[in-house]
Amino acid sequence: MDRQIKTNFRLEQWEERRFIGKSIYVRAVMDASPENIYSSKLCGALWAQKDWIFEELDKMSEYATEDQEAVGLITWEKFDEKNILFGYTVGRFMKAGTPVPAYMDYIDLPAVCVAKGTKKAAYNIVDGWATGDFFFVVGCDELWLYEEAALYGYERASNIFVAEAYPDEPDENGIIPKWESWAACKKSAPTVD
Image (cartoon, rainbow, N blue to C red; front, side, top):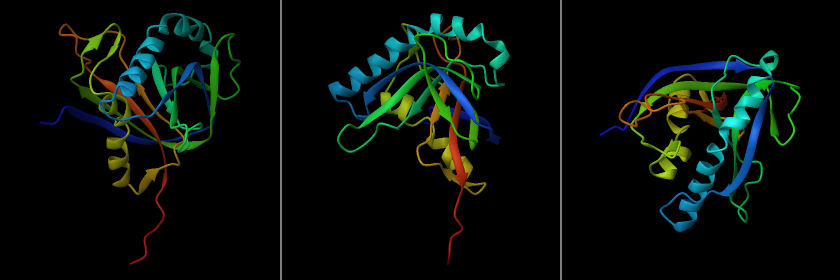
């Protein structure tokens, strides 16, 4: 049975942006090993700190973009065969050049085409964050976006970023009612037959 209902897919051309929030780096182990469990717990612990992050960012409305959700941004700038690290930053997309508040991190994102979409997903909320298989919840979020983007002649853009936004509150059953996703894309190279 499909665990998700995917809706509202679209492609947007973004200008440069700055993502501001708080970052951690964890090993990208996508299986049921104890290391994977520790990585998922670290991401969850970062989400537990979200209140102060978004209180600060809410004060900066003049730098806001149209994407004002609470977002988990996933990057691979420290990923290599030895370290296998991905970055996980809880924060918000802001305009390029936005001043960075004290104690926060930032990632400057290039102008890029972005695949966006919403999915309704059956994930439980425990201690303020989504539970479930870590690879499915975090690692697979962009896969459906790339599948949809391919229908329009686009593909993954060299691991620039993927992102996911969680709603503030689960529904009455503890289920996330919808989940916004973003993934950097580029126009596919023409194929030669």
